[in-house]
Image 1 (tube, one colour):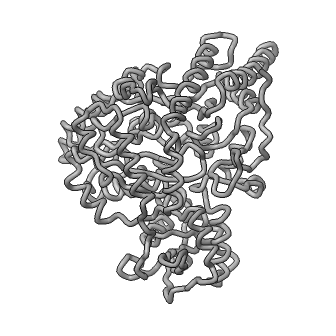
Image 2 (tube, rainbow, N blue to C red; image 1 turned 90 degrees about the vertical axis):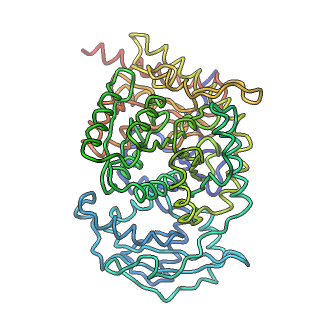
Image 3 (cartoon, helix red, strand yellow; image 1 turned 90 degrees about the horizontal axis):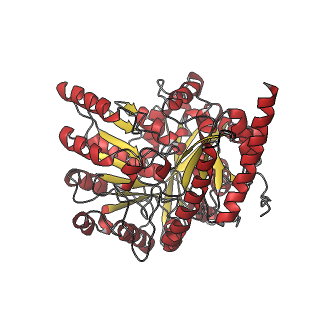
Length: 572
């Protein structure tokens, strides 16, 4: 089969292109690195972007309109939230000299806070909390948008733009030098909770109760045990704040490779984190972890909580959750599992997790056109009596109902799509793994659960087959390691799939995740290499294309890399 040519222009979303899409095609290895550097020339060409990367499209249009309405200086930028705690968050983040570069720190008097109100319907008025800052210090502020995921969505921005003629500017001004805690600022409206939110929570419970490993625990679940947030990172952020309120004394234990925004959130927490990078079967993870836990116990301490992705992003290692549960019970710490990669369809971590966090933006949504995050707090966990009331009483809805409604609609095809994603990813990984066995191939290794030594750990929490979903599998994500950076680049630059960040979409996406995301942080990049997250790696989120098309497309790119390997070998 001839390799299909991608005709989408640079900076445009996966088809069908439409407002509010969350992907963008940026072909080429060096283009991916330019994105991470914030190259202005590249950014000027992006008509779509992953929303947490920064205000874009409708959000940028609303920002421009509010900038004018508030008479801000041309040298200022702004970011918009619906939760008023964004003010104190910006104060802390922008003045944190330990983690911000000196040139990015914002003088308190230069950090400005404003509040506006826009009626988006006859019944609903939305108050927006605006943080304004000098553009020259932007990296010292926009991290609150990127790392915590609570910025307004493009659909909410569009609704506000449609009613901008009714904008009201509240008589409130403050700076970073003022007390902007909740009692001292205009009372928020937040966003209305609707049937879409209720339906989505019920859908998540329905999926969590499918073919459970522990029926008794699963049967206790109800929609009240689900909390919805505008993004997966927002879910992580809100849960993190609740947990360190309950357990303020310890470090956060983080296992394996985790998403880079999560990593930065954890390392910047008040007591920091203890990271165990190597979690494969050859590592001494549990000996080292128990030694650490015993040391903390002897000092009268304990971890705030333990966090792991299952399997990990991007190297797909599956930590031994059953063994981890035994340690958690022995040393008294909660286990938080991000199951986004394995996904509800394939795995059931309910028997071992105290809280399950999911970026439902990914395969549950599946069409790369809306965002969302969820927490599932099982009532069976010992953590529930203290955490559930705290989450319930502090929860304020930041998730716009049209986003929730679309995600609920998308989720109706979730199981059918998951079956195809599982099958396609396994077929592709099997082909690439065969290449890794060939000495003439540039492919060094394939990272996909059934080809790793942690496969038994994944299989231990895999759901049983059902008539509705007869083939639970290993999800849509895999990574391919190459013998050198040059060969990885040759492969990638000849790979005719959509190229850019995101996973779980309807079409295949590839991205040089480690080199692009961590390459700007040399020390971190070196550390990641110690547990297998190598710069010569290409992350692949497999889509719904035909298996034949996928294999032919990847085979073509591998052959190009083989040719380059042969050429380089002949020169030596």
